[in-house]
Image (cartoon, rainbow, N blue to C red):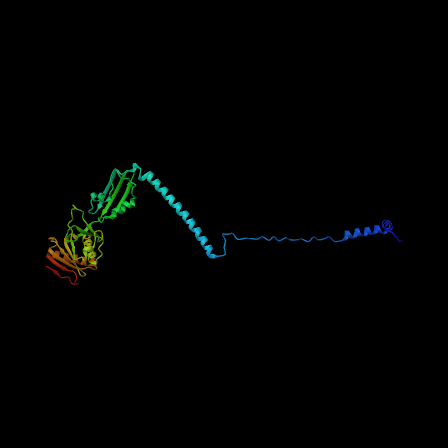
Length: 318
């Protein structure tokens, strides 16, 4: 069938039995087609990062930043510590050092050893009862003030609230005189001490022959070998049961030797001015030998004027 016009072709398309079949075929083909797969699109987000103005690639600048932070925290820490100390000091003054409740009303001084006197200690302590506060000075500070006195070897300081200061003084005990018994002495440790005015000096031996004695000030320790040997001899004498036989008058220092002059002791048959000569080394052995000889002389009732312990066979002069 031929259609010449457009209208005729349209009518043919509608009335033609072929058209429904075509629709059917197209519909079936549409259903039988595989499902369309959707393509997944991934979006990559690009983030631009910028360094902070404080960050830098220069390691030198990084070290400076770390150092500055450390210094800043150090200054803050110091400021906090100083503030706490000031607060503590203010509290201490408010409740203790300026509190009239803790005014010193009594200073108790006990002299345990030595020739130092209570008045001498009070004079150097510079504390006034009824005026000074118990907490004006720390106990350690008071103790150091006492130890600075050459006559004091050790001291114990105690604060007894509300107003008592108790001091126990361990003074130096002189062992011998120096400089012809003019008040200058030496103790067992070799420390030069000077007796205060009005002190009753004990009867002590005199040590002579000390080199450069004038160069040693009061409170200074003499470490010369001969002086230490003489002091050791006196210690051995005091520690011996028979030490009272040796009434030492003078110890003269010589090269490597001690020349000891004695007063008379009738029971030991020791004459006035008797001399003992011994080396400065190994004094305990020489001391033992000395008393062995004294025992023999006493048993024989023979007087003694000199004992020379520098020889193997000890000569004894009668």
